[in-house]
Image 1: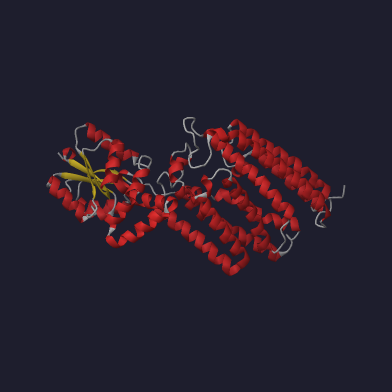
Image 2 (image 1 turned 90 degrees about the horizontal axis):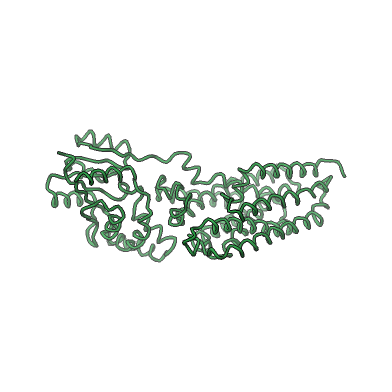
Length: 478
């Protein structure tokens, strides 16, 4: 019977929702760039040589690579019924063996050697030599077509509808099918973090505080900067997710992110990121050169943060606070207005407090069995220090806000009734207090800025601040 024939199963894109070679390359690129460069040079010697260079990086995270669970369950049932399963893959032999140890359902493992890349016709020859004509094959792509045509039966997994149609027309017997689910619009919106564009509203703050919001050129410059920064930031978020794959997959909720879960292919995510970053930078340098320079600094800092800075305790939150303040500087340049020193100082301390709140939450949620927070440079024992620095930074920000109002805002002709602005420090205090109360209880589930967008109390406090600011501009003098 067809069901009883030996079944050879492909690894990349079939058993796994990802490609081990691509995983290994990006792990090397973000954590050991020298190894990634060596892999590129090894291309001259063939794909087998590349796989040999990257095998340790591919193996490192193989236990957490997203699997095609429905196929794994089907294979386990076949194995329990007495069917012999063989993992036959173009991945390096050592990578294949580690994958087989993870799933524990394979009788035999065949992978690429140092000199032979086991793919396409090469794999078909290997299977024919070992099993004669009585074998079946599970694969996912057009490179497997020669194997499908020679197999006794076919299992399609991780494939697109076009391949299913092509294999059906060839007359091959398809005994099971597990099609690939395409990335949805929701997946892409999540990966691009469009909700994080709310952080970029900071670009409009210098415009509003300077009173230039009635000048069309200033408004147009700020709006263009907002769009360009948003596109660039979405690209860097994709790069950050690729750099963070290992820690995301070890996280209770981040493991469901589209790249970590394998819903968006890594190579697709990487190329999209490069297009977004390069495109936004190119347009910025042509349309707004000074803004383009600041955007380049922002991009380099963000990428360096993803590759290195985020694993340095305390330095990481300092970088995040600086990036928020850099947004203000970009907004001022794009609108052609000055940036207040008081505003910059407030921004640094305020966002330092929020960044520390996020770290405090991550420290609390880290497994008790782990000394270090995954992907960070913090220990569980650092929580009291992070809490102290975070609250102190928040209170410093409040003091700077009051000083800004007294020494600058109250003297600007933009505000007809500046004393209305005295309500804003109180609202800011209430919001910071709420953030730190939730963080200390371990109940802060999101990034504080993202939390503010979803939280009714935060939105209410923000609305009050908006109303009093409007009254300060157009209201009667108190």
